[in-house]
Length: 458
Ligand SMILES: *[C@@H]1O[C@H](CO)[C@@H](O)[C@H](O)[C@H]1NC(C)=O
Ligand SMILES: *[C@@H]1O[C@H](CO)[C@@H](O)[C@H](O)[C@H]1NC(C)=O
Image (cartoon, rainbow, N blue to C red; front, side, top):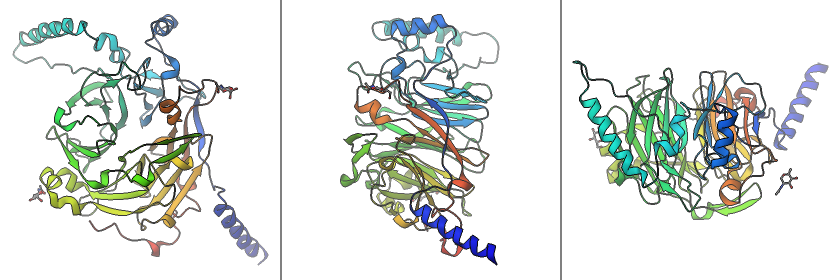
């Protein structure tokens, strides 16, 4: 009797604590970097790269990550000069506090001077290229030699591993975006790697007419149906082109979708992050693909960064170009609801096990959650963790097989809007926590099943 009473009191006490923003479990720092360091072939090469400006350590800021096998892939966009390698990985296990990054798939793929020389060398390269094409053409034997696709990478914002052991790299193709010498090296390109061989399976370049002057392909989601690896689509968020691009691997083709819901909310474009106040007109950014429903369709959730609203559309609509470009498809896109005051978010992820969406809360230095079986209202949004030191600008998530949520934060506004980061401080972090513990006490937890709705009816 006595102990039951005590238990009740304890539960009530917990309630009080939780509403007072004490978290049942916190995200734990796994890796922390002041500056990114790379595994150079030798100290001499690193010194040489620094001397020539190929490597300017403070200009290397990680944006995104994904896990496959014993590798954590990290992208390091070429916003400024001196990015040593724009795609790299941490070799697991790594118990150090600040792991060294290995270029992926190798150093040569990131050697901009060699791979994409600036004029006037361009003409010389073009001549060489003709010769080697002729070489292929004249190759002997009845079987044509398989041409190895180039592994060269310019500057991906994100890279994502899929369930078919492939890595999708969305190369934005620009370098030195924040400098006067900015250069469009290639059109945006999808580079698909076989992770077992580190060879390129396929390259696809988006046609010029699908890339606007204002375009910026900041994020994408991969959607594979029934583990049919060929039946893969990716959905690309064009943040200030206010569009979504759909690429079909089967058809090796892409199309560009417009919708008013891809735009920003003019009242929600004001940000205070890491002591920096700025305004951006950022449209569609966060993407999350739900589980397959009995009719084989999936919900594709999306939101603009400068907005607090969430939207959803069926993947069947996105995948059907005729439908997606038909003006009646306006009604296929639905508003789910609103996260409420200060609820702006960039990235989000759908956890297949719990059907919870985790999303960044950039103005709150926080990670939010929403249980996709509940209605979407400010009251059903949970705050998983917040921290004004470790969670300044969350910029990527992944969920591992052990049911842990991983979070990357990177103080990005300081990189983009100031002279740069302070190399004496911890700037980039990867944190992690067990999902079942992180959601305790939040509206995302599974406490009252009767409250749950079915999937929104699309
Ligand atoms: C694609 O959409 C069009 C127009 O709504 C429809 O007629 C057609 O049947 C759809 N195709 C598929 C494969 O669902
Ligand atoms: C950089 O960070 C260190 C440690 O926090 C601090 O002492 C120093 O003043 C900072 N420098 C600048 C320029 O803000």
